[in-house]
Amino acid sequence: MALLENLTDPEVLASVNAAVDSLDDKDSVAVAQAASAGIARLEAIRFRAVAQLNRHRDGARSVAQEVAFALSVVDSHAGAVVAAAEALTTRLPRTLGLMDQGKLGGFGAMKVATATSWLSDTDARAVDAVLEDRIAGKNPDQIRKAANHAATTIDPDGADRRAEGHRDGRRLTLRHGETGVASVEVEDAPVEKAAAAYQRIDRAARALKTGGETRTLDQLRADVALDLLLGGQSGTSERSEVFLYMDLFTYLGLNNDPAEMAGHGSVPASLARHIATGPNTVLRRIITDPLSGQVLDLGRGRYRPSAGLGEFVRVRDRECRRPGCHRPAQACDIDHSLPWQHGGHTNADELVDLCRRDHRLKDEPGWTYRLASDGTLTVTTPTGQSYDSTPPPLHRPRPADEPPPF
Image (cartoon, rainbow, N blue to C red):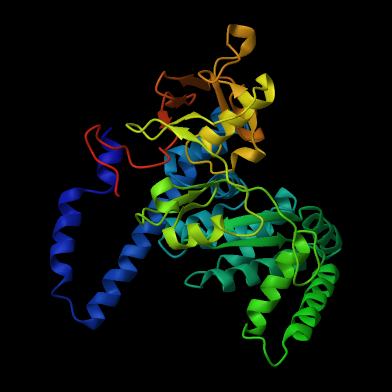
């Protein structure tokens, strides 16, 4: 398609890249600014394309999932992109115009869309007009504040409704960070409860900060909060189930191959051994194919058909099998890749883990799921794009003639 090829001419970009190394400070800044302006213009095109897709699908919920696949972004961001695209192309034409001029990036435009999402179309256009001369060249935080102020000014009576709407949207999120760490956050919590919770945690942390305590106050607050969330009191906690996958040789200290925690990703060998040898850890023997690393059996001493099969599928899949979704298998539904009513069978070869959202997505018109004999799940979207997902092996596949590391 000629239109797509002209958006980013490789020859032009190559010549610019070749010239960058010879730029002085002033020209380096100028080129960075010009590149940002170009990116803003391209982002405006992307918003229009996403809005067009959303119109073609009559605003179906599955549009966000297809955008997530196509743009290689997480589902929550894809949903925000779809919502912003709809707002920018209908209620916020001047904000979109600033993007066309290269004066406003996509992230800043999404701040305007979020700040005006609760307004009527008429009030949103009024805010759009007010902001046109105020947000060009501003950073996202400045844009957020300006947009929120304008929205509240346009509809002061709606401020209470807005606050109530935000509080109704409270949710708990888990964000995986670098290796071995993650963040738990209560988003949009009632401010009085959040402040009171912080004060309780802070008091408990300070009470633990005695002469012999080596942890910092920040570390103590984090530890107290996690202990309380796990149902204990400060300094104690209850056991909760997580899946940690590690090679036997790694567990024995014969190699340092990384382990994997479902939903999080790689964990260094030393940290994995520390977790696996904890006082509340339950070890489970899992038999794998030495050539492929895939799960063959859980090494049960007794057979329970339904529960055992479900447990096997969860251990094998680790996470939701839709490509790009990392919800741990314990929080997923076990579903037939081929619907049962259409001839699917209830066996390990045809069952997969899907989170509730992706379970429902499979039943949307135009979405097809196919499971191959090697465990590869192929998801095809209504536009005909296909994406594959295969459970990763529990260990590096080994050649048949490779001796064990001892």
